Amino acid sequence: MDDTNRNNRKKNACRQEGTLVAHLGVAVEVRFDATGEKKIIRVKRNSGHVVGDRVTVDSDLLIRQKRKSQLTRMDARGKKHCIGANLDAVCIVAACEPLPPPGFIDRAVIAARAAHLRPILLVNKCDLPNSKQYEKELKKTYAGPVSLFILSAITGTGVDRFTANLSGLRSIFVGPTGVGKSSLLNRICPAINLQTGALHESRKRGRHTTTVSTLHRLKGGGELIDSPGFIDFGLADIPVTDLAFHFPGFERSHDTPCQFRNCLHRSEPGCTITSLLDRGRISQERYKTYLSILHELESLENELRYREKNKRRKK
Ligand SMILES: Nc1nc2c(ncn2[C@@H]2O[C@H](COP(=O)(O)OP(=O)(O)OP(=O)(O)O)[C@@H](O)[C@H]2O)c(=O)[nH]1
Ligand SMILES: [Zn+2]
Image 1 (cartoon, rainbow, N blue to C red):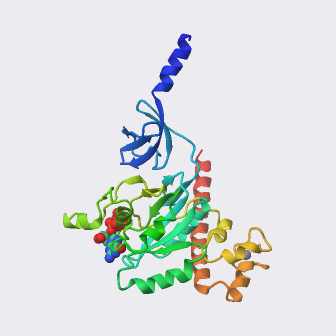
Image 2: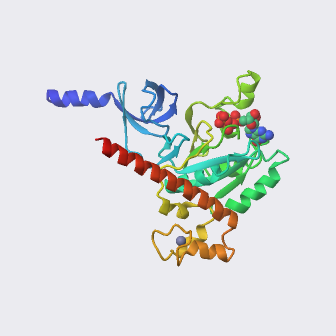
Image 3: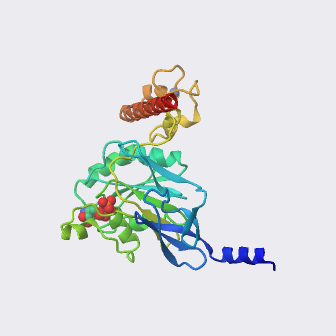
């Protein structure tokens, strides 16, 4: 073996492949494929790595591999955040207390579908007396095209039925803060024993609990990512003409395309969606929500176009 070959072999020996299993802000934790061992590696705060990323580690250097899928959201200031990588499903956690901000579930379903991920809606805290009415409303709007599970992290109701569906999938929990994501994860994998709101409350440190993203292996074979709660699930990179296709409640329109390919379903002739609306097959409430998200996306597209133009002018 010549020196070059020997050096290359040496180099490859200290290169290891793995999965990023925790993001701690200024460091990440990588689980190596070969040994299952974990290593903490320092990264810059905005290094662009997210939980679920496949990486090659060369001593302390982290090389990210191409993602098969990713889930992205936009915050109120227009900044994009990738929340998880190489996913299969998005578990949107909601509860009657605290109620999610208006449009949160719709945006999360749209973002999941646009990223080719399966949306799963979890209605947690079904042990609370106010839950029944809320469950009814969510079932009416989403059940069918979106898998929906009613459960309680406290009593354990519905949890086994839900976890049976996670086998073989990498899923991520998303939801506003306080809906019980960490409590559910604790119930599903008791070994993790994550800090939950109650724990923090007892230490009088407020309710913001999850500050890091972590990936956990499930007994049944799947993987689950717990991510910090956030208030706004702004849509990123979804063209206005694609919105209706991903919008929950418009699934009936998929078989019959509108007359115009760029139809936005307002008042264009030959529009399948407004025709279904007129015949009561799409509810007024769903259509109104669609229009408000459409308006939001149009404003965003205009803003981006304006910024782009200004940038070019300055050059
Ligand atoms: N009654 C009831 N309370 C629950 C249930 N699940 C969670 N809680 C309570 O809701 C509060 C918030 O729970 P967490 O699990 O910390 O919520 P989270 O969604 O992880 O919150 P963040 O980490 O801030 O995103 C805690 O006080 C839990 O005890 C449930 O099924 N029923
Ligand atoms: Zn149309």
